[in-house]
Length: 118
Length: 110
Image (cartoon, rainbow over all chains, first blue to last red; front, top):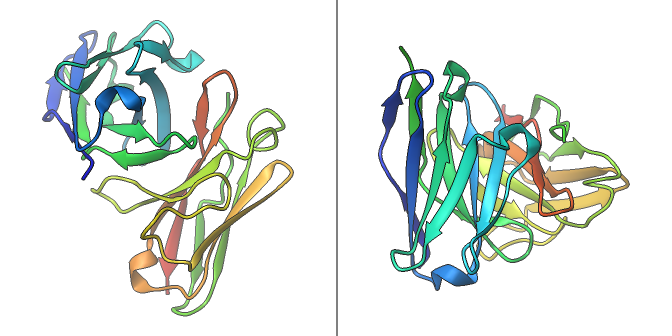
């Protein structure tokens, strides 16, 4: 069955960067895109972008342009999300999710807490 | 690209029905039949409940149904059960490979 397993919680100081991994199993990794979504405390889900794992193409919303980088390693069946220039407002749980080929996010990772504090 | 608008809360007694709206624009919800809905219990990963406006993934009870009219999509939960108490989020494709989530609705089972 499909599983997405994310790396563990991170603590960063303001201005730093963080990189989260998302290891996929149970399906052919390069056949499906991977999305990244976050949820800050008390806030709604926020779409951060996605990567077409077959060719490495990415797309980011304007709100994260220039600050987020999504990559993937097909040999490790792993996607990565790096967020730079962290502020306290980036404190959130970050999720990866598989694109289900029907314009939906059908399987999700367990989430990774990123805390930004001085 | 603004978040889709959902009511903050909705509630119903066990066995009743609740309907959640998700209002976007002619550039997202109104433009594409690619609205999906996610159930999110605190501390757990979100779960896909509805995709392409009204389709249910395997394993999702038929108590969950979706629809769309113009720029507004809706999720209806019929025969409410205690385990349906959760946050629900809509999500729409917004063109040029972009997606946008809704503001979220907390469903309470009274």
